Length: 304
Image (spheres, rainbow, N blue to C red):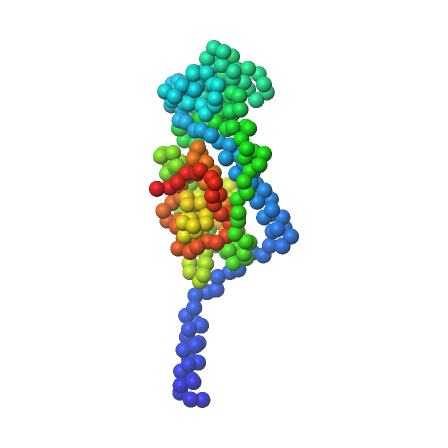
């Protein structure tokens, strides 16, 4: 054996020995079940599109009284023709919100009963085709949203395209847990912030490169909540971000991040939503060509 050949063998052996340990493959899944889960996921995402596109307004509810009606000078101007100039007020006292109708206002509850006196809001309040709901964003803020129950998206929702399913976007991810979950405030699309619990990082490999994403969640929850950005946001996917929800595992264990199931937040479809924004660290330097694409016709929240 020549010296040259021996040197090549030694160098090859050293190269093998210096490689990092192989990354585990994602847990196997039965083909029929995977296909069924994917179909169910697609249906649920179409349902989300239908629901969110029907939201036609959102307004903050401050302490005290907030008037609503068709008068453009009121804090809440309902997008509904024929509405009285002043339909009533929403009265907030801490966490409790009640609606006080103006005389002659045609407000009703979902079961058809008219609202004729101050009534605590626990369900929708209806006026013509609008369903008015009080939303708790998980903090001290309260919001009023309006949904058009006759919106065309409810009966004929537009279809949101997806990338073709590709096994290479289903990866094993190690959960590097923090010593203890960290409460954090995450900015939202309404200019405030939401409370989340940061649990740790999901570490995985794509294209032979290691990536990590901050994972949020709740104690005892079954899924991580992971918002991420990537370069497809500039072209084919919603420009804000997308979401994956891998199964929860203990620190040091592996879960599966399946980007084929990456979905859009509600703010991808409507600007009248209450969406958190992703951590700056959750930006991947790879084009994730998997999961839901953007809906070109949607008038969603546009990040600056």
